[in-house]
Length: 178
Image (cartoon, rainbow, N blue to C red; front, side):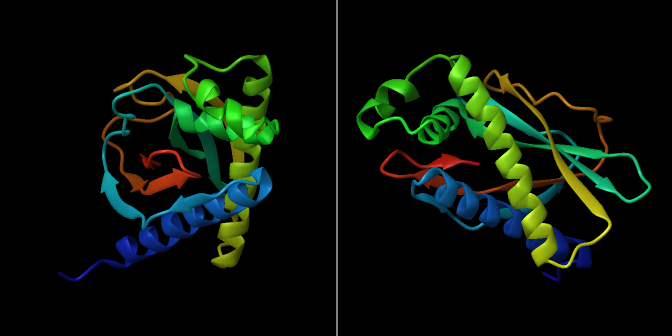
């Protein structure tokens, strides 16, 4: 099957963004963050995190002279809390307890906001590595999203979206979809 120029560009963009996020977060948080290959597709509905609460890190991609195009990076809550704990330098032995929490405490909420900024920074680095210019990227906040519920951001239902998915793993914890 012949792939369109857009599909190849989508794969390169999303694959590079996700890889850079994994590399940067792993380094900055001092934990092993492994990422499988990205599977990229065009869709017309926002994906929802399956099976559990997710944290949606909203990102605004703004082409020069245009309105922002919004998107989100969805992380299952246990993985988001694990990353927040690493950011806060929590001891390894408390990670299983923190992962089981039903939501973040105040310090973890602040850490999640910092993680969102790190994700946007990694995204900007990936765009620069790909030679993309005239496209600004910024973190636009985060929110908890119930299982099966789509993340909230300005979006006209039916408009085209680029959706990337990858299997990821933090340290010795189970694999998850990013």
